[in-house]
Length: 314
Image (tube, rainbow, N blue to C red; front, side, top):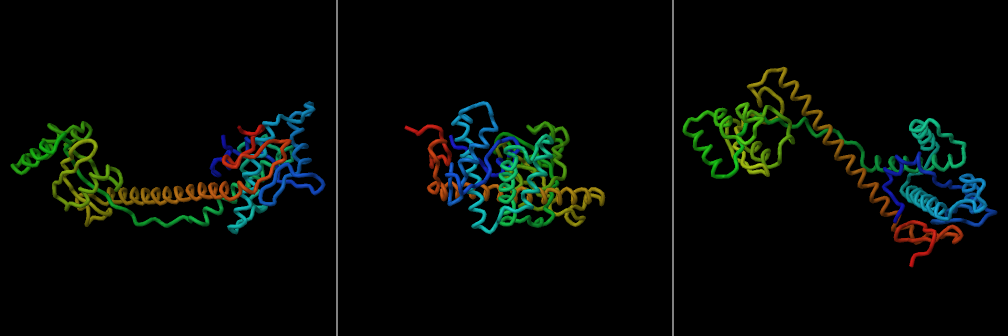
């Protein structure tokens, strides 16, 4: 199974995963290499020995393969970020130390493996910096709209038509809602749905309501049934759009609409950034899998999984 994980998740988990340093020694053969970046075998052996000093075999081969997989992934990410104009800096390292020690106060940066954890978290921070540059935060797109309405929920178009006929004959909407609506919450309140920000109801309901003029009664079908909607008022929270509301109610609605717009904008940016991280990871796997070399003392390279395995497959 591949050890490659989304960068956001790897960055969050780095403090609890022992991974390998990006050290290199000219006097030692490479335990692993990707894109010309090497990890020296003597550095790997020295680190593995710290996991079990009494073990003459130094460490289980499976453990070495797992650690090398992690190192290769992060080394490749760092190479790709450099090509995109983002270098892993001292600032990223300092930020990584702060994050890791906050999550785990017992963490000691100078302990065996500590520099590894820090550097890989720093690479994750650099990746996040890149996505923030590519997908910056955007200002809110207006304060949004509110819908003030009431409805009667029935099962069929025929029942909705019967409700419309009763209203045309002079029946009172609230009384019909209390008698007929399948929505017990609003039905007991005469069908009243209050004044809510756009996006609060299912799409067919809102499409019909916002297309109608204030005072109009329209029908919309949703997964819940057929809604006979009495559109009281729509639009931004102003006295012109909602004359039945006082200033306090309008102020509360405006603040609610602004917060909802900010949440939508933030959600859109975060979704775009997450997709960029996934695409970065996919690029790294596709681009660097063929550039990996492994010392077979530690395992075998499986490019399709972008990972090292202890024994050859097949």
